[in-house]
Image (cartoon, rainbow, N blue to C red):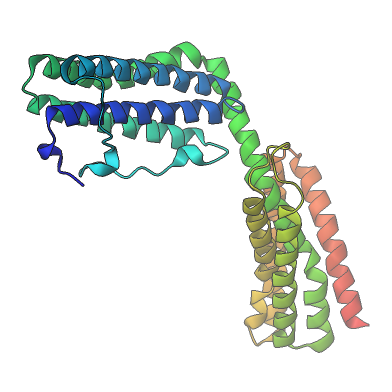
Length: 318
């Protein structure tokens, strides 16, 4: 790895060409990754890719004029001082906020590179081009803002915000809600049946732990294997499975942990209070993200929870 100050003008130009090519390909990946869910933003990054391509062509033209046809391979990882980039462009689905932050970081780093390279350049033509590119990178943020205004009208932004919300609901909320409902409701019967039957808080705790963790593993695998997300847009299957499994286990553990309290009556009261909180949380999530009317969601969740709770108590009492 070389120090930047040890690079010759030829090597600086070769590095600049490599940087522009990399940035061009990153923006192309951003455009490709966003075009289905966020077509307007994809078009924005495609326009930015064209600008980077123009920079690269100007650098190559000057390099050929000064040093000939052969361009040595010098990459950012071969020179000290560059920030290691996280390859967010490889992640699918791409997130708008992550992409825009990465693009901003790319532009800042590239501008600083051109400013430092121009200050070291001795050839007037090389210095002029590097200064020009530094200025263009300095105004690139303004250019990106112009492109945003041209391509992302308020109506388009509103559509993309709705699309982002739909993806969040599909990929995070739905599997998490399914897990929380299953864990909170389905484990009520075994936990309270064991508590009423044995009058032992420890026995109820063990049953609750087994039911919660077992249900979490089962639901996690069921969600992950339900579909691979390519056609439904529901995201990576194992991420959905992890979310669903974790929320299932959490839903069951919520009303299981109170049975660590040795006093049976106190443990039952606390566990019942936790159940009410769990059902209220599920109701709020269904209303907030699934557009279910609050009263309807409360009746559906409350009725289901009450039936399972009563079933557990009756079985434990028999």
